[in-house]
Image (cartoon, rainbow, N blue to C red; front, side, top):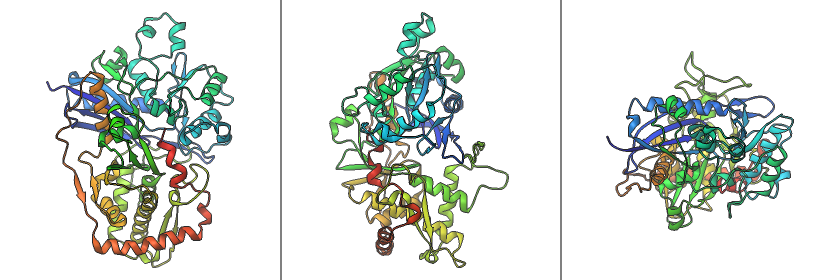
Length: 513
């Protein structure tokens, strides 16, 4: 039986579980959409218990492809800048917690101005507004991946462990976080890993304490008997602390600046890498040079808006607080529909133009998340023209974000890297070669490295999956050079509807930790 490790990646739009072998190759994977709740008051929420139910179900599905007994360890990553309440009796599974993009009344980031990470400031402000007026028996607050690890290991906070003599508490996993993910959620100081004073004050006002810090490859517990019964995993196998999704992605790519930069194409697009080879080996916090907030989400939104799901199906996104049941017509299907239509759009798009909010020059944090302005619509503009305008506009916005930072080779990964049409548009708009990672699911590959290290081993990555380099087409590059000049002029002229949007520069430290 070939030994394997398990990689769990909780994203904002999907949950993914993969089995990784000792060479770092993904041998099997399963995924499903992530449920999100929205309402008219600016709330964007999800229930942690839904994440855990998805993870447990997917591990069971994966067991149909690989023998569960072959799994030797587990590592987890999750989307960042989100805090999950953890009570003395365990995590709050069934409450809806605020996600990035949540703009509920009462969120006051100024109260956390001393926090070094913009994402951390926002996470603490959202958590404070969410907790106000609630009767909580709070022990701590944890990141997304730390919540899932706690469910897998039956972990309890240190205070509850001291207060209880129950065997389950003595034998459970450790509630802890790593420096990168913890700093990105405002719990830790990025440079030192010490508790962030603003987080300490907030949690103590609610009766809790911040979680301790461990290294991402350290063992924070083992799969509990209860989780083993639910998932089919062997009880007692180690579970690594894990890290944030961006760090896991850069580790999977082996991105080291300035020679090789990583461009992750997901709900948002992020570019960066580790500052040097030593940081890569140690999985020290990577650098994120720029973030196009909501770049991928805009493509999915446009696909749903212009073309919608087939008759009888709903999307995995919720409207007015009502959860849409996850179906096969999720984010990826919406983007495919958009790209299908964009291929039929006219080169000039009938005069239609799209400017994404993330490309704007100034504004408060997160206002531009998933927003944009579609101009020049008229009776001669078809849906296919509008689709092409959105695709090209998002690509131009990415060029604007990346231009000051691009050095060396550019490697793309994530869900957006799986469609060669989108990668070709990026190469044409950027006017440079774009390399598609041999394994676009780079976060799972990086988690495989951590899971093997939790066993005291190193994955043999000497023969990675072959990568594909997409060259820019000269005619298209010339066309887009003129369009890009027009695009930047449109930004300079000002877009009133998006003037409060947030730029790549304003959002660059969202993933910096």
